Image (tube, rainbow, N blue to C red; front, side, top):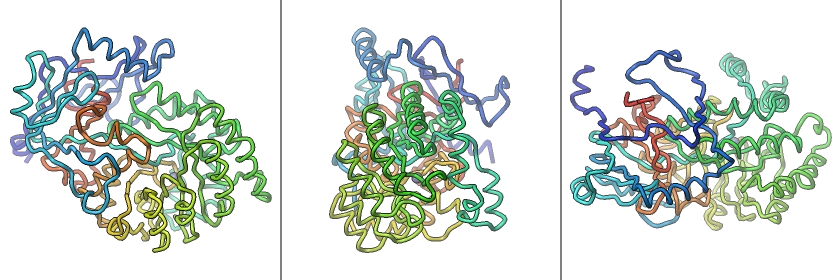
Length: 495
Ligand SMILES: [Zn+2]
């Protein structure tokens, strides 16, 4: 069986010199391995991460400028050819209805990357004619090439894990019962408060590795496990540092209103005031978040409290995302429409009025089916109804230590298809271009078109539908961020 499979799928060949790792300084940092073969043991499919902090505090933007300057003298070109190329070329906005099924696929497609930017797409014969002998080449025959995943809803910075609660849930306890015994979000809050900024950064690094190796190249990242002024700022600074010092792009969201901390249990409105009067201005002054989010739910923040926080956030220049109607129908989606939110997220309990409000106000529904799956619940968001009604829909992992501890957009696609009846094409659109537009990055990432950032993933599949179909498998073989290979499990590692 194995030899026949190999015969059908040619080995991925990399010709010429290919940058295998993202290097931004002489001081390479090795991300600690959390799985796979023991360190030091080489296999033909070993995985390496080697990237480090920029020297002299140079920003990503600074590196891009440097790249352009260097490019004038030394052209840096990479040609990936022979692939089923999922371009998602189309209008520069979120895709709706039938558009979500139109992936603009080029069979035997090729993409030329120049200095980290997509220079052209076309068929392989055309691309070969247009490129010179010095171009570095990846022969991707038998592979799918797609834009990197954009994960529009994550909580990646936290201390500890909650495998004990996972076991308790398996034994029959509910999420609410566990929270009542001091578990749930508050157990993560205790550990996160106790951790130093450096410790939180080190704990988050392997998660960044997980995201990259599963094909995710940009994420939205929320705070929300600190719930004090200092601890929320600490988490947002860690997100900023991860963005600066790893290849992953992180877009920060302030989620001080994630849970009511124990010290405000009897006076939740005082905590709302703390968020409004102290946290929001400090976060704004520090330029530490682009978005403000609130967990709007009956046992957490009411619609009225959420409205107070989000109205003030708007005045301070934040854009709005809302955790809405995850566990009950409480008008959260309607409020998201009224407040002009960019996204309303979860939406398991949304009704027709909510759907109308989101559509009328151009709010994207970010669906998180991994959380429903992992909590063992059976009520998924009505994705089919939303898409048919013309809503822009994105999907995301909700990566967090409680309800959805998965970094895999591929797994989320599988759940979206099998449980929410989205088609594989709709799931891909929701995981790339539509998600990019919720982050205000639709003109830069989310599709494979000339002029866009070269965030690309090569999957070891003959057809894009196999990505969700063979579920639980990581199909990502090579991950490219801004033109640089940051993950490669082909055995081509030369470190
Ligand atoms: Zn969330």
